[in-house]
Image 1: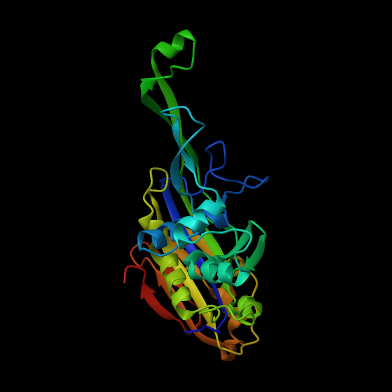
Image 2: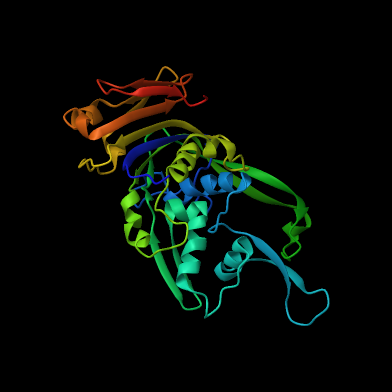
Length: 315
């Protein structure tokens, strides 16, 4: 079923003794002024992993193959697939100079990550750019007392490539985490981003679907919590706000995380929507519904006068 409603929202992710988004040095990603933030890629990745675990087709995610390097016996090496190989692997379809673009587009839109986030696909005479219906901003840490902690880690192995005398002992490493952080991500969903593709007569394609949105929405509620890698354990979904506009609404909003106030009092997170309410109070006739999901054990939400449907994030 095609979805025609635009949606604006915010997702809150808390991080306790973990590292939600590291830079190439292993430290939490920061701006030039030192503000900690998480990229949109860090937000999308656990959602894509969740979809993949559920058996959905996900194109833009790393996968591996074992392939021989040259003719030397025993030279097989583990290596990531390139985009062309990944395309052929998940769609079970060859991609060459004779492949029609309609066929490529049909396959691309059958992948749940492409349907939501779009794609840049430039392979073998196919130069396709799809601006995703779902656009996600950068997630800035709103907790003011965040500290970065470094833990020394002793490896059970020595570094055999190091010829120094110290290499006779086990090697040392480190793990860098934040003691506590709280990231707020703004997002928007605009189904009309696919209007141009609807006119091309792609088989089975009817535009952005309600089913694709519901799968994205589910990811906003559980994907970070479910993604328990070594560095991400301690990161979990804590809060989500969805503002769904009416079908022909003329309401347009910028990133709404800037209108949400956050602090921590007496070991509870407090999220205030007072400033957001001032923006929306005269626009409620443009809105179909407002939904809030939150961890009602450690979080308090001040909804001001917003007419919200409120749910526990655990439901």
